[in-house]
Length: 217
Image (cartoon, rainbow, N blue to C red; front, side):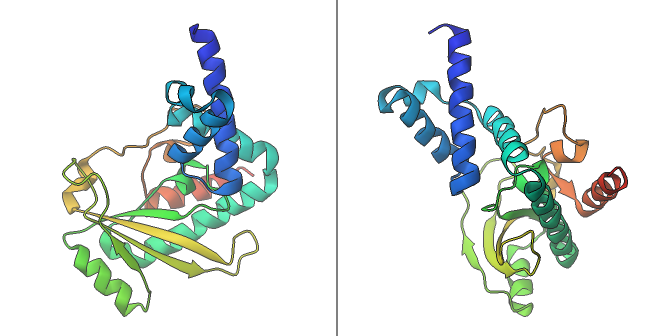
């Protein structure tokens, strides 16, 4: 298959995957497989899969095009909620990652925070003392540099019109020294704010970005 045709096909698959992520809440891997199977069939799906950067670009384009102001209000509200959570978890050096940071948050998106602390148990005790019911899971990738020690998930209620009534929160607990490992999901998209593209943001960085964006509206 010529490279030009292959790139066109992968862009088509990425656009279809982006729609599945935005509308149905699929994760990237599932959305890509499903979109490829629908477009080229099961047998050729694996060879045609686009990389996540292409899907992320198409998802951001989809959200801007089809959700517009609703998307922008939701993203702003999610970032403000994330900042409130980061202030609440300040003792554990929280950093925002994922879709809420990079601007691809859909109505299905969770808020993902990385915590850097000497003890995952301390985070669990904090949640219990705060009256937050949570589920603990052993994350994948154990043994890799900077890998999470534990993943804690819970749901919080919201009363903001721009958000669903309940928003999921995922806390990935990392060793203190893991902050030295470069974030995995940095973006090279030229139109992103540097904090959005960085792959990981502290509360200070997020606050600065929100103030800067508010000032230019």
